Length: 297
Ligand SMILES: NC(=O)c1ccc[n+]([C@@H]2O[C@H](COP(=O)([O-])OP(=O)(O)OC[C@H]3O[C@@H](n4cnc5c(N)ncnc54)[C@H](OP(=O)(O)O)[C@@H]3O)[C@@H](O)[C@H]2O)c1
Image (cartoon, rainbow, N blue to C red):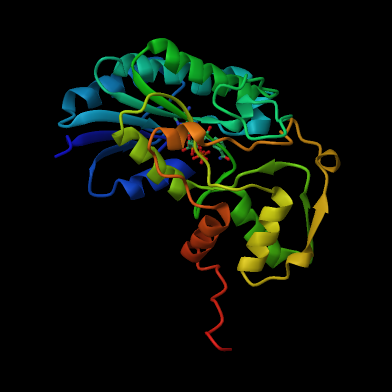
């Protein structure tokens, strides 16, 4: 019989933090949002983790779903992003070293986005944004602590809750005749619920080091928007292609963000489903999926 686990989820109010709690329902879970565990406060972080470790009845596993994820804001607030994304994962890893297991989440933004084939875990990172630099610092801080840890990079995360591209497209579909969406950035849309399930599997396995986990397949933001329109019963021709250059943003956006899952599957972890299948499931959760026509109609 497998050993019981005691879970701590940080970033409990975020997309992933919320879905992790759903996946872990019925387990021994402590879920802390920013109000209970603020990653800018080293003393609070260390004492919260120690307190939780002392009270854990099973093998302790901490999943760090908290991050400074405002990619554009980070360009002018890199110092805060550096503490939350860069330093705090190291504090968590140090507190856990020799006592428990850490699952930390990172991002495709550690790469420069110029590749023409999926990024492997050992490809050289070359972040072009403050967010990417700080997340890379976090990966390195976790590795430097030398404990039982796995770092999972993901990309293009959306959920049935929170603020994300899929929900924005559903809103814009209701508000506008047409929507212009960039067609020159390619990635793998990833449903937070699938990622949460995958992270729990990675946590329960003994795998350590660096992994990539996204839904399988790839598309552009334009392709994703068209799929949201089509699956929710709207005319996908209302989604017009545009370019990254036409939408200047403070932070550089990678042209290509596809992550190679080879290390994930080599670790014996089940591949996440194709992105289209998961988008359909998320839209069904939102009550936004157009029902299939009856057979024979
Ligand atoms: N979203 C994506 O497309 C994407 C892509 C690649 C990788 N990732 C990574 O995936 C992980 C989960 O992201 P997500 O999509 O779930 O992001 P999210 O919805 O923005 O959630 C992030 C959570 O972190 C919390 N947080 C921010 N600053 C904090 C602080 N100082 N102390 C404690 N908590 C703080 C936020 O709290 P508040 O709600 O109070 O702000 C929020 O609950 C992150 O590591 C992220 O870098 C995300």
